[in-house]
Length: 259
Image 1: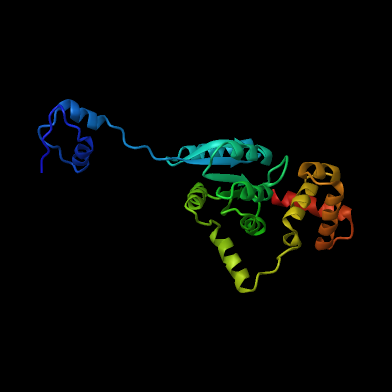
Image 2: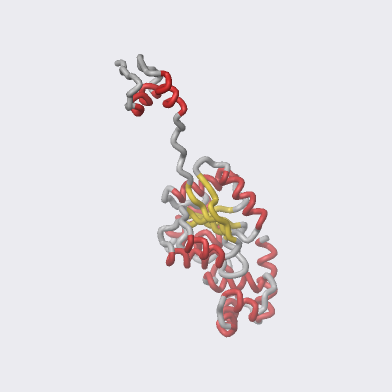
C-alpha cells in the first residue's frame, strides 16, 4: 500500500506509521518527510518523588540514583517532618521516600501516619539503616507501602521504588517469611523487649539513647514533659529494668548497636 502526498499533505500520523513499519510511502514531498523524521519521540513521564532524610550525604546519593532513571525524578527534598509536610501541602508527588530515623521533629513512622491523614493517596516507602525486624511491620501499620534497608543493593532500592509506585507492597523476602510465620502462629510474640514498645515509646526510647533529657524530648515531639515521663515509665516496665537510669543505659547501648 502506498500513500500519495503532495505539498498539501496533512496525514503526518499516517506517514509516521509507515516509518515505524520500516517503509516509506512514495511521492512524499521532501520537506514533509523531513518534518516527520525530525519529530521527537514522546518523553517518558517521570514519577515525582519527595525525598525525606536528615543525612545530607544520603539524600545526595539517593537523588543521583533516582535522577539518572528515565522514569524517576526527585522534585523536592526535606531534612525533617516539618519540611516534608510543607512540601506535600504545596506540591504534588507520586511517592514519598522517608527515613525512619528523622531528627528535629517526628520520626518517619509518625510522619507517615500524618501523611496518611493529609494525603491518603500518596504512597510512602520507608528507608532505614535500622533492622527491618523492628521497623518494617510498624511502618506498614503506619500506612507505608514498603520498607527497604539503606544497605541493600541499588537494584533492590529501585525495585522497591517502582514496586510501590505500581501499588505493590515491598518488603524483603526474609521479612515476608517472618510476617507469614507470625501470622500462621497467631500474630507472633515479640522476640525481644524493645519490640514490645509502642511506636511512640520506641521513639522516646531512641531519643533517650541519643542523650536527650525529658525536657528536650518533650520539645522535639511536641508533648508535655509529664507525657514523656509516662512513656518512660511504660518503657521501664516493658524492659523489666529497675530504674530510669537503667532505661538510659539500655537505650544508649541499643542506639549504639543499631548504628
